[in-house]
Image (tube, rainbow, N blue to C red; front, side, top):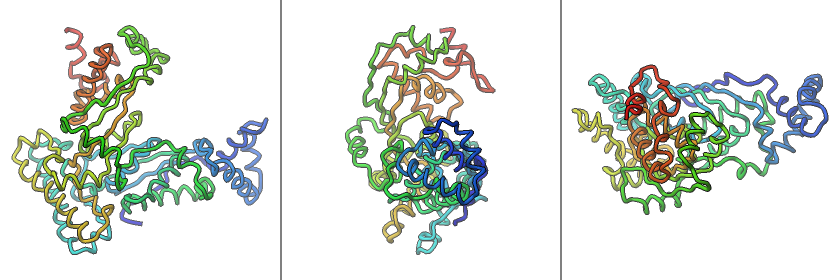
Length: 445
């Protein structure tokens, strides 16, 4: 295992037995609770044998709901951000992550063995260290930490708490062994599965042909070696590469201001559920900092550009692929920021030229690299998540994106004019500790 630390900190006692009892309860007059009591009275070997047979013929045949019954919580320390990006791609895993605004140079960064053993090892260490130096100088010079972090590499370390059920853990385990996934991410997931297997071995056993590959809810694949469909979409949508672009929208029913008012002000969940059948499709350019936030917005459906195709395009068109925060663009740190961005791109290029796998070199890329995210937002998210992201307290980049998305939604369906707004409008009051006054200003208009 690498420098990271994985610890299973939460799981139901007798997790595997609980899942089996719930599955057996589908085919028995007795309740799952009664079956659980009976199973726990059996000698251990007899019980385990029964559990394996049941799981092989249910969970092992693609009946994923059996695995949904039990959840596991992991604390993961000193893991590179590249791995938390990977973990967050699975839509049914849940996370609480240490803010990257707390990044400290003393924590350091991860380097894979392939880079450590290369002729470029010293250059890589010095260059990645310089990004932390600029981060700390920027913070000390008045740059907000949320902006200073843009220059940090994907191999910068952080902590994360991750929770998921057995089905989604099997999904992320399968994803972790696909081509293009950095080895450190594979090692982290393998250790998560290893610890979960110590508690529930037959929930994570390989039963042969995997029926669930098609039944898992597909996740965006940042580390796919290629994504031809998305690449073609990007190439055909370059009219304004700096802005989100509305690709299309669809409403199967007429939305009126009255309907939306009833849904929001009346807290009418039936009407709110109806809004999920409105569809807006956007192609959104964003930094990897912003993508990390967007991918944790689990009610957005997303497909993302391959990071390897983004990096290749950045090598050819570096200026077009750099996101620079306004606070840095207009500061004394701008020149060094840009130099580091270009140097990190060049380091990635040099590492791959020396034969180091792209999946091992990719972690030297900075968070300010622009990637394209294909986002589906439904009508409920046009109110809820857009409300969260257009709030003045939201991070500047995702706020900028959300405001443009809101503008396009209002133009497509004018009934959203009063509701694709900051969250204080939706809730009827400001939920933040410090009220910016937007709600009162809006009411006076």
